[in-house]
Length: 186
Image 1 (tube, one colour):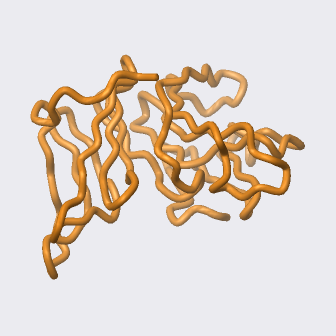
Image 2 (cartoon, rainbow, N blue to C red; image 1 turned 180 degrees about the vertical axis):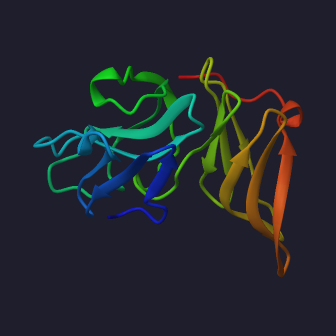
C-alpha cells in the first residue's frame, strides 16, 4: 500500500488505496463480497485515484489524469477533487468533479469528510477545504510559527487539523463560516 493512512472503515466496509510510485487506485473489502477494485483504472497508467475519505454519506477522492506512462504519482498534470454519494458497490459510484486540486501526491493525504465539506492538506503547510455541493474552496494558509500537518476532522461548524504553533504541537480549529469568500470551482 502506498498511502500513509491506507484504511477508511465504514460499518463492515474497508476502503484502501493500493499502488506504487507510478500508479494508484482505491479498493474496497466487505464480508459479503470480499476484495474488489473500487475506483481503479486497471491497465491505464495515465489515470489514478487515491486519498478516499467518507462520512458514510459522501465519498471524496483525488483523481489524476494525463500522466505519462513512466511518470510518478506526483506528475499528474490534471488533478481533480471528486465526489459521489456513499456506496460500497463499485458499479454504483457516480463520480462528479468538484474542482482542481493542489499538486500533491495522489495517495498520501486522505480527505476528511463531514456535513457536506471535505478537507485535507494543501501546499506549503496549508489546509484545503472544499464544499461538496458546489466545489467552492478555501485555503487556510500556514504562517510563520504556524504549520499544519494534516486535516483530522470536519463537523458542521468547524474543520480541525494537527499542526504546530511555534515549537508546540497542537490541534487547530477553524469555523467554516469564518473562512472568507473562498475560490469558485474551475
